[in-house]
Image 1 (tube, rainbow, N blue to C red):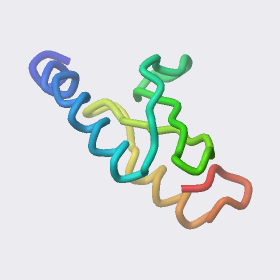
Image 2 (image 1 turned 60 degrees about the vertical axis):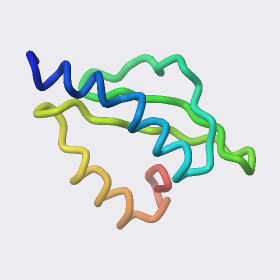
Image 3 (image 1 turned 120 degrees about the vertical axis):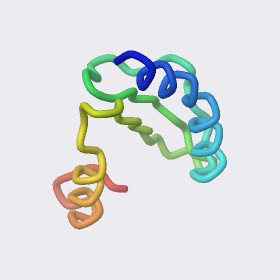
Image 4 (image 1 turned 90 degrees about the vertical axis):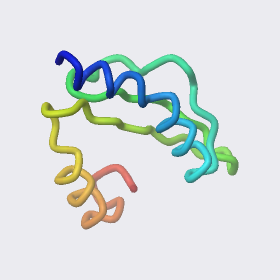
Length: 81
């Protein structure tokens, strides 16, 4: 992925820190296995709920479309966003 991939990797610590604050959660530093086009991180929300942060790799995943589908489903048959 060249420079784009290097920039994406370099941006991850700040992005994850921002999402932890936004979602009020603590991220497990070990990535979940199975992601081929995204980084998957388990997080524990302040209320004890478990959640997953999914950060798509540049140019290889359609996270925005996935997110829209999950929002429209509102937790019915899909993960809740």
